[in-house]
Image (cartoon, rainbow, N blue to C red; front, side, top):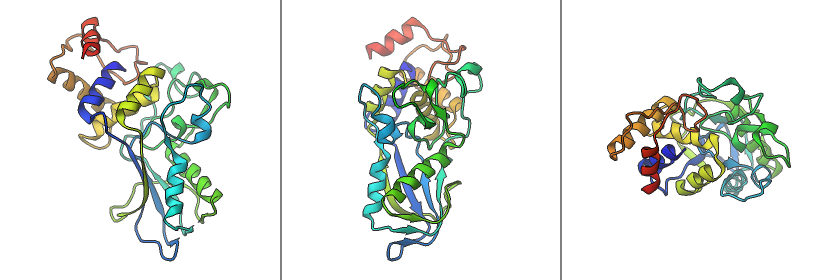
Length: 266
C-alpha cells in the first residue's frame, strides 16, 4: 500500500478528487426528466451512506451519497420518466485480482469488496451495524446497479418519482447534460484513510485509477505498470520488486527494505 500511496500522490497529486456525476440526454422540463439518467462512476472508493460510514468507531472523511441526493433535489427535479443507470465503465469489470487466494474473496473473509468504478459502502449491500469487519458484510453482486438502487431509494424518500428500475449501462455520448455531481475528499485524505485502516478496496481502486488516467478502462495490471514506471522515474530501484495488486493480498508481491525505507524517507 505504501508503494501505491506514493505513486498515487505523485502522479495524481494530493488535491485530486473523484467526481460522481448524474447526467442525462435531455434537459428536464418543468421538473420532469423524460428519459433515463446515468450515475457515472469515477472510481471513488469512499462513496458511502451515513449509516455505513458512521458506524465505525474512528471517524474518517467520506463522500456522502446523501449530499448528491440533496443536490439533485435542489435542481427542482421531481420525476424521472425512466431509470437510474449505473455506469462503471471507467474501470474493467474484474471484481477481484485473479491471483488472490480464494479465501480473500466474497463469501469467506471479504478482505476487499467487489472492485468497480462505481461502488457504494465499499461494494457491500448489507452489513452488521456493530461488527465492522468486512467478514460480516454481504458483497453486492452488481455494484454499479446497487449504487443506482441506493440512490433511487434516497431520492424517492425525498419525494422524487422514478418510474423505471435501476440498471447498469454505459453512458451515451450525447448524455451531456449534468444534473448534479459530488466530489470525494482530496486524495491526500483518501490515502491517509487507506494507510491508517489498511483499506484493501481503496488500495485496489487507486491502482486501477492510475491506469485509467492513461488508458480506459483502468485495470490492475495497468496500474501496477504505472507504479513501477513511476518508482523508476523517481530513482528507486525496483530490481527485486513485484507488484501484483494494490492491497498486498497477492502472495506473489515482493519489495525490498531499501525501497520501503526510501519511500518513507521521502
